[in-house]
Image (cartoon, rainbow, N blue to C red):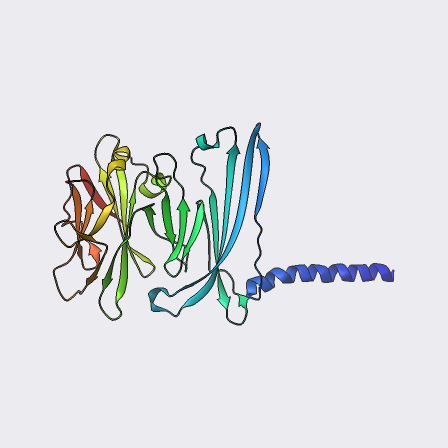
Length: 299
């Protein structure tokens, strides 16, 4: 009888302890976050697949909006499933899945509860502290890669750009001075439908971002046969017009001193898209566009 009572007491204590552990973690007393990397072979309908799973932990800091600096740990998880056959090079695009969590680091020696978590398609995680987290999706064949920049504070998308394209930046003078960047996404990449939508005439996205916030997004349309295939031949050379043929990637703007700069996207040898920057926004009403190209601002 005593042995039965003792066993019941032990069971109750174990149950309380198991229930308490998650509560401690949620409350911010967690000092260890662990994960494993693994590779597994599995069969499915007579096909052989290699499943891989990797974890990463990286230290980062950010201070969006002039607030005090935040120190966090970025937990990353990348999973892939590849077909194993005699010609793996012919398998085409096999995009993986990326999972991210942002854990604030308490200087008392523990992790606070995560402030953000997100899952999205991707093949690689690249930390760009303090600007954000870059999730890279590899392209296949004629496609280029896509790079999605996420906020370290919320993991929301700040911008998406095509691999190999350069960021154009400017500093807006004032108290405080503000940094801005302009990113270009141009078809074709594996993220076309997600970024550009299902309309095949939608061929590019221009994003204006600053201080961890999306300030403006402009969608570019090409009205022609096979528009997304056509823009494969477009140049991605973009910058601030500073001379007859020179494009600067950075400029400094004093709001009190005109004239306003013009963003110049040289899409071809003799064709260009010109967008004046007025009051910290790219002005579509004053834009100069080649024939067959239109634009709209996304809200």
